Image (cartoon, rainbow, N blue to C red; front, side, top):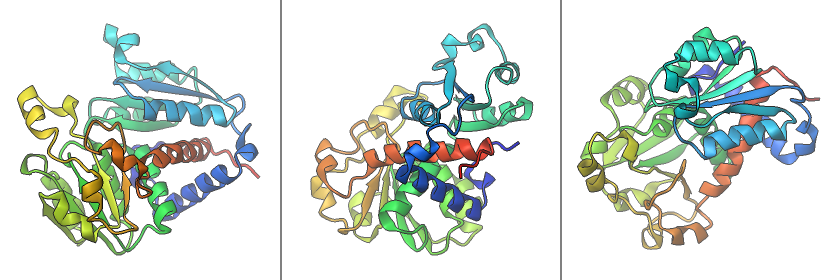
Length: 306
């Protein structure tokens, strides 16, 4: 039995196979329509989510399976004080696979240690968000045709952004990757990420404050929102939230084949006018998220479709 806690739980070869499977699902959805008939997915979401929870549920439904779960801690026995370990032991009696989001780092790992079914980490605090990373990799591969030899710009909240941390871990294993880290001083990438991942693997990167300075050299711009829920006080959030706004004027500085990704939800860091730019692929990214989660469910349940 396998779990997905981090993008590093899969080798590069396994990741490539997973992305190939996701692309086959996109091309041949009817072939997979009954692959999980009789199987149940439990979505345990201790904090709010739209895309991650619903895309897991859509993925299972598209595979012919069924779903159950809760969308907030308040609507579960966690409100009564039940531990994650006890919850997952219980859910293991009901479902075949589980996707869990929790505000505390490491909670999904605790669940996996007590679970009798595969556990998918659907986001744990500011730590990891591996299914979003799989979505990002599939999107980048589809729009650029490769996952190597790319200049990746990461913009916004690099300190608390679990999507950013997971994506760096994943892309660091491909050759010819260079990062441009775009953030205000207060939201810089944590030192442990710079030392333990980028410096340790000799991956070139630079840190800049101005988005305009970085745009001309990028293959991919990965925008993120400043996350209000990660701040300890309102004043700091208000000061940071409008630091970056990507608009049509700034997009003129970017190469013709630079694509814009965003894990969503968007607040105002990407102006609505950018949605019409063919380089804006963040809503295509949402659709890719369903295909890649379908591929992940099949992989973790060890279901093979001929």
